[in-house]
Length: 170
Image 1 (spheres, helix red, strand yellow):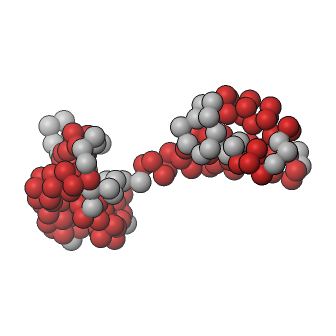
Image 2 (cartoon, rainbow, N blue to C red; image 1 turned 180 degrees about the horizontal axis):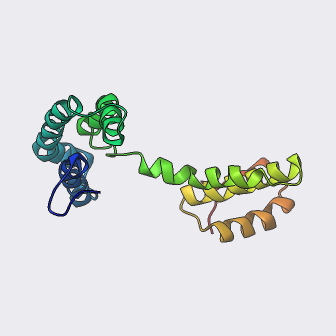
C-alpha cells in the first residue's frame, strides 16, 4: 500500500496502460484498417513510453519482489503485448478467450466431486454444449430444449447437422 499522495511503480504502469484501453474502447466498432491506423498514431507512442519506463524500472526492482516479478513478466511478454499494434483484427488482450474457458475451469473443480467417471463425462459434455451455444450467439436453455426435442427424432445426417449450434435456428 502506498502512502497517501505517493505513487509507486504499479501506479506508473497503470498510467501507461489505462490510456491504451481507453483508445481500444473508442475504436471497438471501427474497421480493422481504422483500428490499425489509430493504434499506429496513438497507441504506439504510449507503448514506446511504457517500454522505456519498463527498461528503466526493471533494473531498479528486486526480482523477488511482487513488482519485480510483474515487471519481469511484462518484459518477457513484451513481443506478444505489442503484436496487437500490427493488425486491427488483433485484440489488445486475451480476455475473450479467458472468459470463454472460465466455465471449464469451474467445471473441472466440480467434476472432482462427480460420483462416477460417467457422471463427470456427462457434465463435461453438457458444459461443452452450453459454451458452444453461447459462442454461436444462442441462448443456452432454448438451444438445449431444441436439441433434446429434435435429436431423438433425427432420421438423417441433415437432421443432425441442423441441430449443430452454427446451423441451428431458434
